[in-house]
Image (cartoon, rainbow, N blue to C red):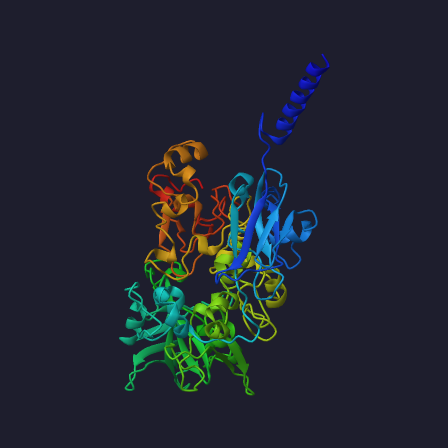
Length: 632
């Protein structure tokens, strides 16, 4: 009997042991994260802290309206959550070989975020922006690649030197970023306008000889205080002055200003040195006065003189008020403080610098590059006066000289940063902050631009005095941007920037290197929905999606028709929208809102507003082919 009891007890203990070990019944998951932290050169990164940021925390943050201010605690989805909760988040620390492990992780989804102990690398990692579930990393080794950091002693070298090794990125020469400023009608060795056959249409018109009449001065307007016409307006008395473009005997394009109100005033002649824009919707012309450049006249690619909106005609005034004084009724030179060098160049030049001369002139500088567009500082070497490699990757002098096993640690790789640090590289210029110069240029007290890899918080603190656009740059709802180059301003408010699944950066949809010829440097075709469906596969059935959302199946539309409304205007827009019975119309703008929501006709910027002044909504674009504007 005792023997039977002993056998029973042994069997019972064995069963209990097997159950507790998971051999019988449901096996308990071993939620251990194992990984290694390196850089792209294969260099192990020791003593780095690897944190698990619960996706639920980021989801909770996304439900609270984002605060666009320096003290904000919710405009950096990962870094702000880490700062607030570092003490309670699980973490691992890498050994000398870069290896780490985190044990006993509760089931769930996490953003894996690495913080290096050294100054050679930047926080985040190439795995940081996509949440991983415990099922995805269980039993696997996760490899995390960190971006390098630009050493403090690094200097700019120019894109020509970068392309010696990185030949596969030659297509950057074909991007709008590289074509922003160009010697009239001439590509530099770093430029290729072949993707934009209409690039010089405006320049050709001016070179052939064009005379503009500037009339109807309105001091309440912004940069287009004058109406502009190639013909004498019906009321000659309203004309202040004319500007006549001509090709001089020296082969250069020039323009002559003449005072119509006071013909005895001595005419003035200026030389047009470069074009400003032209790849997409507009082009302006840079002329020199003294040592500084100034922009004048805007050519609207899609402009039409039959439109009754002055901003949408083929030619639009651009600061003609700098060339004529309406109080004295005399011609004048532009104010020195309004030079392109001071007001605009920082977001265009690579390695931007700024000097002010004793007589008040502003002279911008850029990195020397033998294949650059123009010698702006007169030292005999051309300068790279457009967006080059180092604007996004940082000054490359140390990187160029480093051995192969150290190269990755000396340059910034935006794809290995968390999305918030990656996006602010683009966002510093695709928004409307103010910096040390008290204009839309985000420069610090030394008039320098942000080095890539800087956190959004450091950027706001050290490079801005006003974090973003003024109220006038938004539609009445205070949400959707009205002024152009505010894509980042909108994007921060989108669900793509803060969510619990995948935190997007600009480079998830756009290709900065311009490898293909798709419009706006998109990574895939947009109109057919391929770009959107690469993430939103579940909504590829447009009929089912629209039926669920608006109660009617649509099939002749794509994602962008509803979700990327063009609320902003940079050129003439795309002409007239729908025309109501009263003959008034909604104008169609040309810059996409990056909020990716669907503005409704009940929006405060639309309901009850005169059509020509209302915020453009999808109703005026694709929807307008079937629906009527009346009643809005």
